[in-house]
Length: 193
Image 1 (cartoon, rainbow, N blue to C red):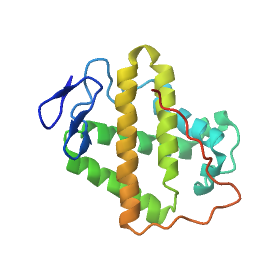
Image 2: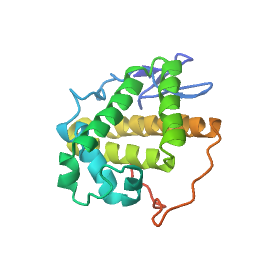
Image 3: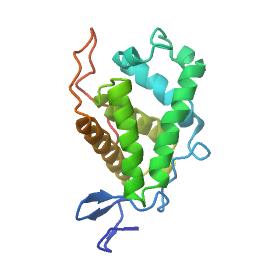
Image 4: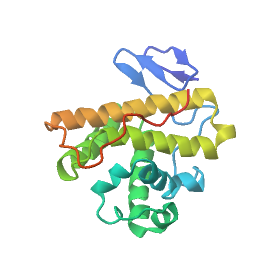
């Protein structure tokens, strides 16, 4: 059980306080910590990113080093993709480790959002799509340790991440980019119940 800011308990992994959903512990019963040492190998390697790029090839336009790659195995072997996968999972791990500190979470996600808006010009919808793919991989690999209440908690975390990132985009005055030949799909991967 987790406690919200008002002291009430919530079994789905999130406390609901006056300012929205707050996560207080990445270590509640039936859960796991997002950490390269504890997640299944497929979740901490380029597998989630490779799946992301295979299922949503329009996302590759932002990556000159591997936008030409088509095969998942080729992507998984790419040193550049491995490096980016480590950065993605590292940022996610930092967020989870600091869920008790909303200012730290906001700071980390603001930096990520601003960099992707200003420097990389990545459409923010890709954050929602990628986080869904990561959750799919984790749910597949940890099916026995990923019950519905844990899935709901991680879905809330996914929403928290997306809202913070999009807030950073708005803060820097993001204007949606003119779509290239391919645009992100209208449907997003499911992240469980």
